[in-house]
Image (cartoon, rainbow, N blue to C red):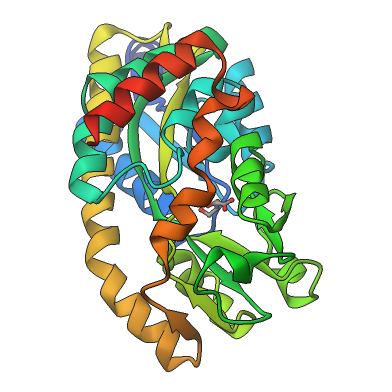
Length: 323
Ligand code: EAX
């Protein structure tokens, strides 16, 4: 008997530590089924499988550990290891992120992918190291569209005076001010505020209208596609630096593969979502006067928002690359 216990003890001391999985805590603000969660779920699957369960990914979702700004602060401190976070709230941490959200920048998905997966995207990811994030890659929230509960919007004149919720981002607030709206920054989620009429409208990609059932509380939508919105997938720089090169490579390749998977998944569902919103009774303006919207925000690149030479420099390169 004693001998057997000794053998078990020796075995446990030798192999036990290797058996205990290392936990990666990952934060997303959105609920299951959301674009961010699809990336997170895929990443969990790939990294657990790829490490033979040496890593265990615990996903904290639905704002259970705070809004996106608070998740980012926890990642900076290292109490959370990773996050799939919408680009908007990053701009208070590093203004360089504003270049991606420049209005009407990307023509289509292919152009967004080429740039974000290329050297200009890498420059943004690398810059995040200055503020404590290991920038890993971009996945997709999608082209943002305006919805509201007051009246149909076909041109910027119709936006005048609408109370629009925007992300916690100076850029997004400025865009909607330039368009004549009355923008209010608020963290996610915002269903109650829309339902109670604290705000008239909001802007988000099509998946949000479906997953958060905004068709129940918003009558009008316009396919403004005014900003292409990504998620920036980050790790805590402090934590990432403690990993072996093999584990760093595993995590990086898993999150990149998850992003590729999620972008495709998101895009193939968009036509069905538009049909659903109409079926649910939303009135959709599919071809608003985009040129008029564009003209209204044309002065943005000269504003203080982009004054930092590093940010201005990258914006100029990007505007050139999308020509
Ligand atoms: O992904 O805050 C926002 O508007 C985001 O787009 C939201 O997290 C949904």
